[in-house]
Length: 175
Image (cartoon, rainbow, N blue to C red; front, side, top):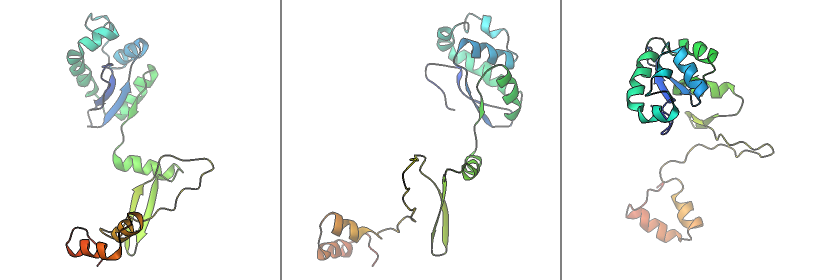
């Protein structure tokens, strides 16, 4: 799972339904809230876990305790109790879920591309400029489709050199 190297309670946890939650409980208040939400009220007073430094030192002992607690409920059922305790939490989405959100987000994060009868959706560029005009999306070139242009126009090779490379099968060309 995803986790922070120096904050053992800043990581993902798997719930009963196999879904994961991101839980960045990195302050003392959040640590106590996490313990309360998980009904592990004895942990904050355990010397192994009483401070951030001791939790880091004993993270290999702490993680199985927290992991077992998260397995008591489905992921969605943890959102409310953790939020009520002031612990940030988010359901880690599957790729289809994330893509579905991107489609309705209005940021053009899913870009449809078409070439002939072939249609694909690709992930859009997350960087958006207020006054910028985004480039027109284009379907990826076929293998070798741009070889002559790259070698000739960009690298200055003449047509006979490019043809020789193609004949020797050093490059793939449209021919």
